[in-house]
Each structure stands twice: as structure tokens, then as C-alpha cells.
Length: 96
Image (cartoon, rainbow, N blue to C red; front, top):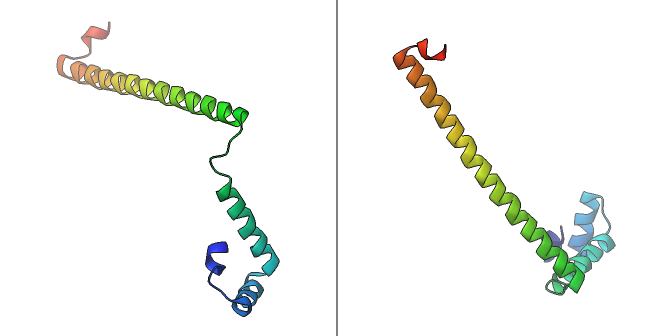
């Protein structure tokens, strides 16, 4: 909504707000908060940086484990299909 109303003058903004059931002050406040959030990027405290690094490391570990498990699952599925094909070709006598 902040982006939608950025180019509107006061009268158009008031009309827009009436249609949406909002107040112009709300949109102005959202704009201020958005700008404050944008300006605040890149300024992390030491604790926030450590937490971010820890989270990124944990994410990498989880992704690595997921890839490993997906490979194992694919291998197991391939072996299962191969096993079924072998039994279909040579018969079911080998299961005894």
C-alpha cells in the first residue's frame, strides 16, 4: 500500500484510504517504518551477527543432510525397482 500510494496527492490519498477503510496517518506511519527498516539494514549488533552466522551454518548443515538423505532415498528406490525387475525376469523362487 505504501508503494501504491507513493505517487498520490493528498486528495487522491484520502479517497484511496476511504475505499480501503484506512487512515492516511496509517499509511504514512507504514512508510516511515519501511524506510526505517530499509535504512537499518547492514547494522547488526555483535550478538545479531553471531546469531545470523549460527543460523546460516545450521541451515547449511540441514541442507547438506537433506541432500544426503535424498540421495540415499533415490538409491533405495532404484534398488527396489531393480529387485522387482529381477524377480519378474527370474521368477519368485529366490525369495524362499
